[in-house]
Image (cartoon, rainbow over all chains, first blue to last red; front, side, top):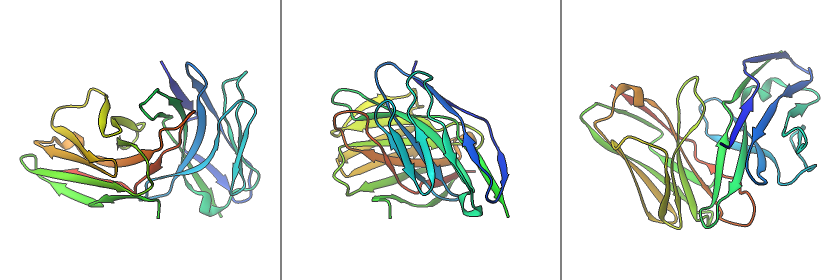
Length: 115
Length: 114
């Protein structure tokens, strides 16, 4: 079935370190891919997205490239800040005719950035 | 402000109580979702409504009963819950359009069953 797998957390980094959170997916058809972020006590917020192969999504210094050949959508940031501490979710969305987008999430990766 | 509002933000209820969670969106979306988020577990999709019709029910126990009276409102009616139902319940909405669609989430209702 359709699924998303993320690297397990927690990930602990020092401020200004480079971040990579791995995400791979399995899907029938051609999904859109997303990264969501959840800050403590909040719901999920869309961080970035890519809708087709080789697209790069970017926002707030975060980037991810839709790699169809490796079925991956790894999240990267060149220099993390303490304020980036949160849980990050990789997700895919499949269009189901007349049923909206079916959104499937990975298990989430907790990121903790230390000063 | 995400455009999706959930009430209440926190709820404590006994196992014999009946309560309802409310979700409201004014984004013009026509699909709405309930997710359950438990500690140390992936997000679990519970229900999907599209054009006010339920299109998915992921084997959710009958003590959870959704209702979608119109495209802007979604309820989750709760009765005779168990302590293991304690979790963050998230509502989301999306627009049914060509290709995969992103969802917009509310801030969630933190439910504690005692």
